[in-house]
Length: 269
Image 1 (tube, rainbow, N blue to C red):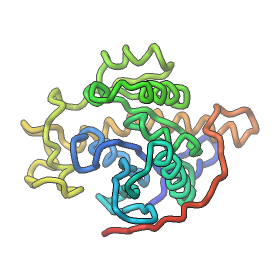
Image 2 (cartoon, rainbow, N blue to C red):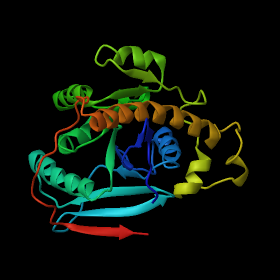
Image 3 (cartoon, rainbow, N blue to C red):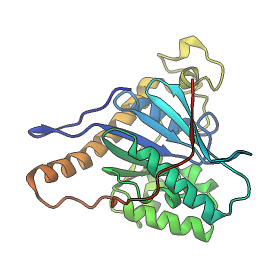
């Protein structure tokens, strides 16, 4: 994986890795996220951190596989019988240890607030809450979800939505909300070009370079990803510039110490 350098005035920011927390499998359901992450992966390593799966094994482990060029999917595997607090504690150790192994700084990208329960102590140079309207509607409105989302608003530097209407709803909770409507009107289109890259479904070769009735070309999604990346870059530049001059920087997540992850790593090809 190549490491991205972000140029600032007079110096370059450290290399960055984007780690995206999602509560759905990479190959199912969230086509918009897959398209955007493929666009981001043109400029930096992208790690997709999926929800944990229950597996009859001990100790806990991470299943790691390459899904596409510069895109790695990580799936935590946990033993049966853990309650919610135990799951959060174990995932906190696994997430922190994995993050500490990544070179450079981290961009923390949340598709759902649920992952905040085990990643709030990570150190990120920029935190993004990417909240699509259809995705938000499917989230359980439990007290736990509401509390985690409220906490995520406080941590996030940027909030992205997929419509102006959703942005208006979110602006009451955050001061930097940016709508990014999908390049096509149909939110449920088949992203056949991206499916060819990650192997999730059959691919028709002529769709990868041009728009057709089934969806938008990768070029359209790449442009939207670049606009999002531009906003992220401004946050990183502000923090990097402040660090270089000794000026107070915008607050970031605090760095914490803890037990090292003692599980196993499964690198899949």
